[in-house]
Length: 266
Image (cartoon, rainbow, N blue to C red; front, side):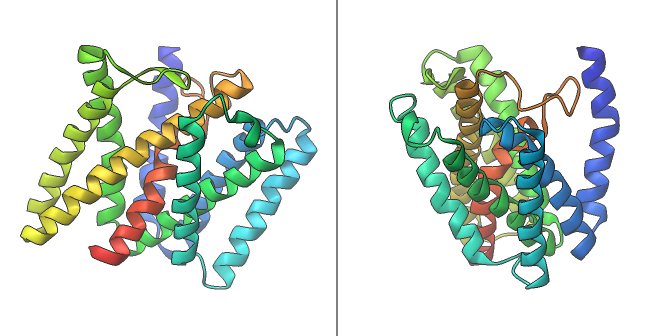
């Protein structure tokens, strides 16, 4: 398993870095759309769609929606980002109420609808932040990674109080706090790098806190869906790492929220 993880990371990391920071405009939107469509393929599995032909048709439908948004110049529309934020508030309610309220969303059609407001706004958020010159796209990527690393080590060292035991028993409130501390450190580095004033410091620290918590929710949502399906990974597209969704679940929640904050305040 370790060898598989290393081999996959050896080709995946350079590819993602080249795509995210070496491309702009249409090529960037196409590259990120392909990533989102792979995640969409996995989402059909989380929605309990078994027939490959139907899964492919659903992914093709998502691709057509994304293409239409791009052609209409709506691939950076704020209303799609707001759709994502509203959808994540509903996701929060379902995660908090799991498994008591699972009947309200467990039908395939509702899980597919959930996938639309998770994946589409994430793609729009990527486009918005790449247009910033990639500085703030880099920030949100580093934020999610720092939150994950901080949560892992703090949870291992201090984890006592379970965050959502019925959704993801391994996560703790201490881990969340470790992630918050790590991302706060990242925000301080960015304030110094970008030369932000005192107001910018306050805004970025508050934004960092909110987006860090959103990234935790993204992780919990996928954990809830996988638990409902009785599976460990979204797929095996990335040997040793699971699926694409297993790598970007936190980002899907963080991207639309941070993109809105960027457009409004930074």
